[in-house]
Length: 177
Image 1: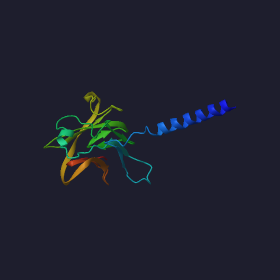
Image 2: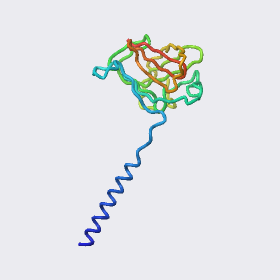
Image 3: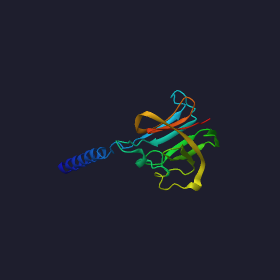
Image 4: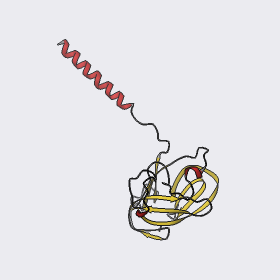
């Protein structure tokens, strides 16, 4: 009887210890947390037209051109390549685009508009495996400068469904119809 109670006690202690160890294995907050932007942005509307999932790197005193080098392909965020889903056919930056899920890449520029790329590759890490042969469309993202520094890379849709991407003192805009 004592052996049974001892065996059960050891079993229960082992289970409790195992649960405590598992609870302690949760990762800390990512340095570039994932976020989502949708249009329309009202949560009361279930029929979304477009959704973009991206990670939000931070400048933290660093120079934008070091994190998103000019004239080089950029993942448009951090970690995995940014993913954009269109729930119906649209006109993206003046070009027709079929409904579907795509990767969104950009080519930054210092003195002209950025190139915004819709690419059919999915589930890719960064831009390391970017394949230009999978580009669906390339459009010009109109750049503008803002006075206030945007430290954390951000994406949003304005009331006209224009995609806005902001970082540093640069905002890139692409119309969607």
